[in-house]
Structures are given as structure tokens and as C-alpha cells.
Image (cartoon, rainbow, N blue to C red; front, side, top):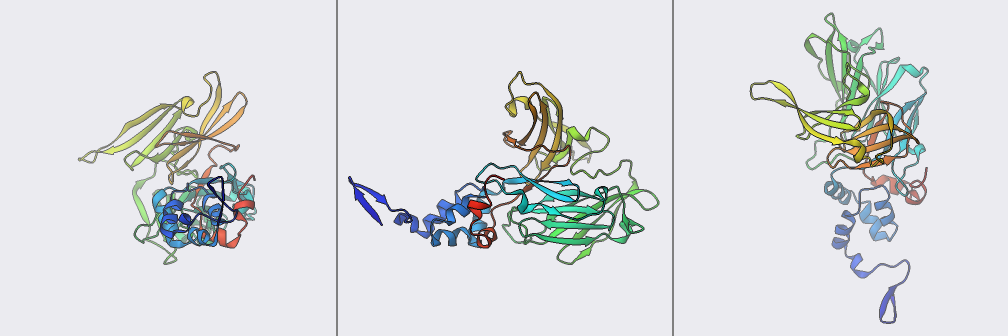
Amino acid sequence: MSDERDGKAIHRRGTTPAALEDVNLLQEILQRLPPQPSSLPRAAQVSKLWEGLATDPAFLLRFRTRHQKAPVLGVFEKFGQDLVFTPTLDAPDRISPDRFSLNLGFDRHDSWDVLCCRHGRVLVINRTEAELLVYAPVSGELRSVPVPPDFTDDSYLYPQASGAVVCAAAEEGHVHGACHESPFKVVLVITDYGDLSQAAARVYSSETNMWGDTLSAGQRCRKMISRMPCTLVGIHSGRVRIVRAEDGGVGLAVLSYPTFRLWGRKVSSSGVATWALQKTVNMHKIVGLPSWEKTGKEVIVGYSDDVHAIFISLECNVGTHVFMVNLDTMQSKDIDADLLENSYHPFTNFYPAGWWRATCHWALATVGPA
């Protein structure tokens, strides 16, 4: 409905132009919204038709397929007995820390660690109880996975252990970023396995609720496994991270500020592996600091292979800055957070339909300044 004033159509508040009531056209428009948390919830407030489309599972699948990569909503870190979520987006996309933070209630601070955050889930290791906890922040599900007995010592998980959680969705066209209802797998790796102190690994499947067979190295492990994700031990772990290389293989990010280098592992036809330099950039220019700005301690505090971005912390004259740098585009974003070295686990996720249906005020109340 509209009024005519001076030859111009003025639509009354609460109505939408007829063209935007065309379902096919509207779907094309909504798919082009940015994949930020507030985009679809705010669009859903326009009308019942828009709400139905914005929360339709088939539309959300097309939305994710179009964008491919979910945004980084924030980071998880260990703080005392709490798994703490720190938002990294600005309003109106900023998620309240209380929405995802979780009190785990462990008795000892040194008995647990965050191992991994990938495909919408967080992996926590509880050494005292010899268990792994798989947490899906979007749904709130917390699942306990007992560690296999051969990976423990008198019911206490070996201290040199690391792991990862990955989505195990098998349907064609699945796009990672809304995996909280999909099956998952957990990979657990330890050193000091057996009499020869070998490295060993096992894979757990949520579909079978079982661990697979043990895979062990054929010789003694010469290096310990770090509890930090994507980190090599034996070098300065605060300035080096294992990342995805430009060709999708194994890469190495090395920060020697202001120089940043990305290396890729190449394997020849004869099976010989070498490292090749793929990229060298001036990180001072990438993060946009003035040329006169002096920095002190520079460390890589996190990496997200979901969006192929590293997070670096720089001590400057006016305080500490944390930047997210996309390794594909080399664009940076200043994150308003003060994070500890090596404790940073980025969390990526698309807007899920359940958020809107469960709390219709989400776009105005939950999304906003923390």
C-alpha cells in the first residue's frame, strides 16, 4: 500500500513493495546479504514471508553455498574453570559472551585445555578424568568422549596429547559453517606410546560412538606434541604456526616482525619433501600501523583454517593490538580484545535458523554491544 505525493509513491511503514513479495526474486536478494549474524534475523523482521524464507533450511543451504566461508564470530580460551567466548565482531553483529561461554567446573586449572575449535565445535581435554569434551556452542550440546584405555596411564590421560574435531557430514554439497547437527570425528594423538615412545593416533566417530584402531609410528618420536593447535615444538611457537598452504597442502606461517612469510611443503615425484617460500609481506603495512609506531612483543595467537586467517598480537606504544589477517587477501581487521599468547581458538559459524525461532528478539537484544 502506498500514498501518492508530488507524483512519487511513498510506502507506508510496515509494508513492502510488490516486487519484494515475489518469492523467487526475494530469495535472490536475500542470498546476496552478507553472511554476518545480524543480516538474516533483521531481514526476517520485515514480514512473515521474509521470516519464512530467512529461516527455511533449503534457503539457508543455498545461502551457505553461495558464501562458502562462515564469518569469525569470536574466540574461545581457557580462563580458570571457564571456557570463555570473546566476540570479535562490531555491533550489530557482536555476540554476547554469555551466549557461548561455559563453566566446566573442573577442580584444577592445570587439568584441562582447549585443543581445537573447528566446524562449529570446540574440543576440550580433561586429563584428570581421561575424557574429551565436544561442545557445540550454537546448540549448547556438550558430549563426553572417554579416552581409550591404551592412551591413558592409570586412568590419567598422557600429558603429551593433542587432538582435533572435524565435521563428518557426508551429504553432497555440504558447506562447513552450520555443522552443529552433523556427525563429527575426533582425532587424538599422543607421544610416549608403548615401550618405544612412539607417536600414536586414534579416530572417534560420533555415528558409531566408537574409537577406530590405533595407528602408531614405526620409530621413536623425537619431539613432544604441544597442547597448542597447529604449532611446531622446538622452534619459537609464538611466531610459527602450521597453516594451510596456497595449494591446500601443509604450510608454515612464520612471523619475524615486520616480515611475514608463508611456506608450503612440496613433495617431488620421487617422494622427496622440501619447503618452498610462497609469500613474503610487510605485516606492518598490512595491519595499517603508522610507520613511526614501534612494536615490542609480536606473536601469532591463533589460526583459523575455516577462513584461512591468522591472529597476531602486537605490543605498541599505546597498548596491545590484536589483528585478524586473511592469508588469501592479506586484509586485516583490528580486534578489540586482549588475548593471552597461544590461547586463541577462533569460532566460525553462519546464522542458524534456530537462533531466530528460539529467541525472536535475537537480532535486537542478543546481537549488539557486549
